[in-house]
Image 1: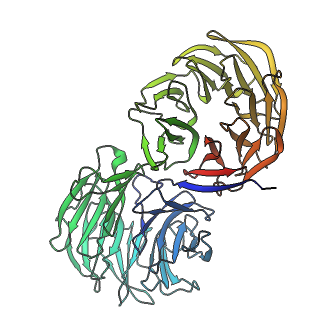
Image 2 (image 1 turned 180 degrees about the vertical axis):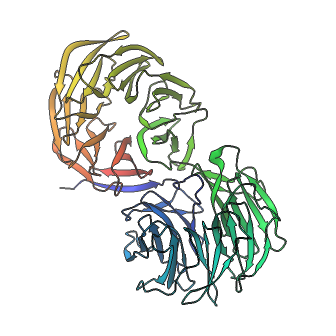
Image 3 (image 1 turned 60 degrees about the vertical axis):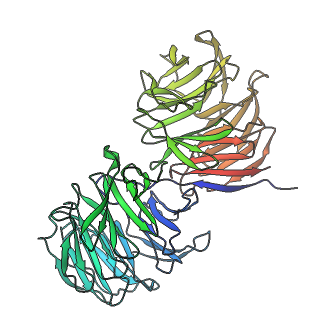
Length: 609
């Protein structure tokens, strides 16, 4: 017998996790092919020429803050908020761990390697010290990072001998070290920067280094002696704080990213700005990170969007990589004009449109949700129907992409489902709201149970509502009302999600007791099968277009694909999103499943039964 199997054939990666006023470090591959950043517990590796090609490393138990390639290109060092540094292989898909160290206790903010890939410096928010420098293969100390009285934000090592090390701190100072073993030589004084030093970087040839601060200034120094050369742009390089700088490969130019919503391209020889890239006027357009890699100039906005800058057109990036930077909570798929689109909603209210084929992300125009998007579905009028913790249900045309139609709920909605004829059912806290043609037409309140999820039969005849008491109540749809005829069926525990099969033959219900129950609609909702396998609460389900299979996802990080007629015939996807439970499921066709998770990534799976 041929066993069923699954292949993850596409990972649509998350954007960097951003925080206002905090610099984002981007790492570059020494071969120039990939770039690196972090989001949550994940390190994301993306192809710089085709960012749709991505890989995710998910072995950190805590939030990862920075990741940097070794100059050899064979290893990556990544650091997390607990002070752990993991050094792992880049050549194998498994990313095997080579070494793990704890140089200090507290958040790691930056990492630097020596050019021979044998020594690593890391800095951050240590409790007893703010930095360490050690041998990559033994963890033995090769010097001391001292001379600062506050958190160290940035570190870099000169990539030519004699080695030098520089650091920048919240004490408004930089520090200069010689080594190995690295010893403190002098402070780069308070008279230079008047506020936090956010970023320090050596030029690739080692002749110079620069420091960038929250005071909007960038200073240049001699790479070997540490003597100050000049300030870029005179009194101020930027109107806002400078969060990141990155040198050109030939060391003649650099780019700087600032909270003033611009990126500037500097000629180091004349210390003047050649180009100013205006990235927008919104607060989310603040620039918190940048990377110069071969011919590519990248910057990262507070929104998490990654911009490919165009020297010949500074007001419009060559491309902008969009997506999610916060955990994804809801998902649906819709075909439009012969192409499939994946719609996903996240913790911050953002809704992303992912076009399959090109792997391009986009978003809706107009004001969208302002809080977590709990559920979504596309109706027969090509409208994306979404509900959110901002107490609204929104109807957005997937063709016009304008998120303007909203229906205000009395209380917070937590589940929404749709059916033909403009019908929608919103399940709210203590209420069930029936909508028709984007208007509330009927409300069930003063209920003797807490509704958790709902589904309208594709024929529009029945609205099923699952409760925290484990019952599924079947309301009859009569015109613009829902009539309680006393019909109900029992799930095995408090209901978490439910959906009718596409042909309306079955109703599947998931519950907190780790079971999925399927009812046969034509047989007076008798139990067709109970499906056991999950080790924790089941939170989401989706029917295959073939009506013979459905998928379920649970808090156990498992995804199961079940066969309706045979509860024992199942396909298991363990660790679909490692260390994160699955938050959404949707089918593109009967052999292609999409999963989303709190890791803010979208994955596409090919299934063979």
